[in-house]
Length: 560
Image 1 (tube, rainbow, N blue to C red):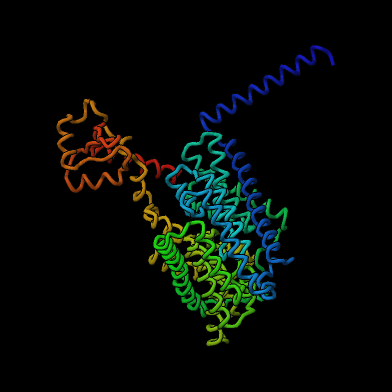
Image 2: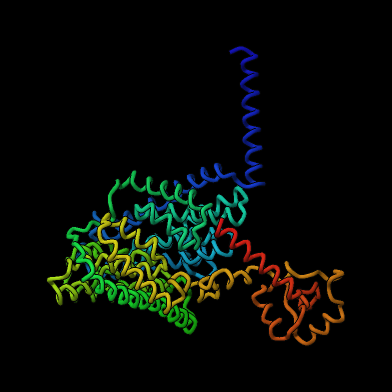
């Protein structure tokens, strides 16, 4: 190679490196363009798809190891042959490991799931906790592998949020970009978990972003397809559940039965949600009264789960074997009822004991069992005008899950894509609509939004309810000495009367003062070393203007 050729190559390489460096700076400073954003969405979709795949395979491997079985799909049947003390011991050891993991990686000992992702999308510019998210994923992996009775989708969704949060930090993404990337990650994770790209994309829009803005649709679909491809490269283009005895719906005559099933499923979903909240409250009360270390709480839950699993191994893990049996109609009426009750109790123990995991798969199992029990009764009363009782199991599966998740559209599609049977859509839609309509009146819209409401994060009512909590008084106030502000003497007189707000307080806490005292402004103070320093004044009109701007920005994003 001649000297001139080498010089030319060196020069070209230097120019290319400079172009990449300049492009990276532009990406960080101005944000990605539309085409760049789609490539980023694709990369996040691939990463989240692999995360979901590895999480699933990790559960299968660890579960097969601790329960000494070659086929975890039939774990419940295999567990019946194991010694009782082994069934009892595994969840206890797993709970102890989970407790230590969450103690080291979280501030409150609580595993992060979908509710935290929804909160991140709404009020944290699409970001979630990274360290707590990694710890929660590992804790949920141990939980689901060692007898915990929850689902794998919640931890995967949060871990996908961790991936998008890392990318947002690299490109310094603004709030809109951060939320869209979070939606991409969630869509890919759900799609890869269920081999359901349509439902995965709609789940991200309906549950996490909670809007259907056009600007977010294309990248989310790209990510969802990428996640699905990752799943299909490993498992092939197969459905999660196979209906062995699909039945035809006796149209019009049988639809009232599915309306009634929907109402029953709505009540079942409310029992499922409130039992989990009750278990959480009881666990908190017990922990406070006894001084129990938080890292021991999952181990105590493991004792209860192990004792229950000795007699009823169907509660172990995700529960796909029992769900398959329900969809195939391979159960008696009393079995379906008992298993549904026990699974609800086991889920409450798992979540109340802070062992990690989600509610999606358990709600599918409980819904299938509820639908099967109802179908056995309904077809027994009117056998000449009824389809098969497995049809009711199919509809019940969607109805309970939709009410729990607060996602009637995406859940209906997930059920279709899980089974590959699109012929009975009317039955599923009727049951889903009734269950969500009823359950949303008895809880705060869904399980996730109810969780957030219990933490005083008011997302269920919409942006008008939570935007005030995102604005700080210090950011809206007029600083001391501003020509448009009040004089110091007036402010100090109000402070003496107890009428003031701290600079770090939110407008949510400040606005009631204006209503009660009929004031035009409130002094804003900062507390330092026990002293109260006046730093400015928060005017009512300024607070309303800031609130109006936030509402307008949210509306613009949701309709763009």
